Image (cartoon, rainbow, N blue to C red):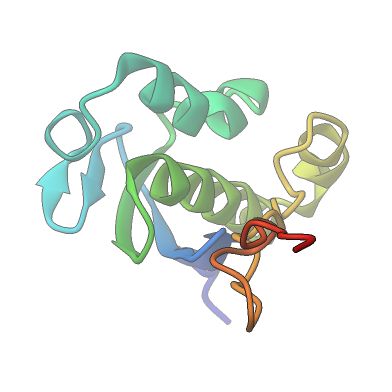
Length: 131
C-alpha cells in the first residue's frame, strides 16, 4: 500500500471554518487561491498561523492549500491555525504532544452571545423606570 502524501483537517474559531491540506513541498501557502501575504496582510496573524509549523520544525516541509469561510480575518486565521495543527497530527501522530502543550489543538470556543428577547442586546437591558 502506498504511503499517503496529502493530509487534511478542519479547524474552527467563532463562526470561521477553515480546511487545510498539507502536501509535501517547500512551504508555500495558498489561502482561498491567494497567497498568504495577500489574504492575511497582518504580520502578527501570519506569525500566529505559522506557530504549529515552527514548533514542529516543518515550516519548509509542506505546502499548505487552505479554504476559509465565515467570520473575519482574525477568526479565519485562528481557524486555519487549528486546521494546520490538526493536519500535522494526521501526518505525524508523534507531534500531538508538542502541539497540545502549546495550545494549537485547542478549539477556541468563544462565540458571540445571542440577543435575548425583551432586551436590546445580549446583556444590555432597557432603562428601568420605577415610576
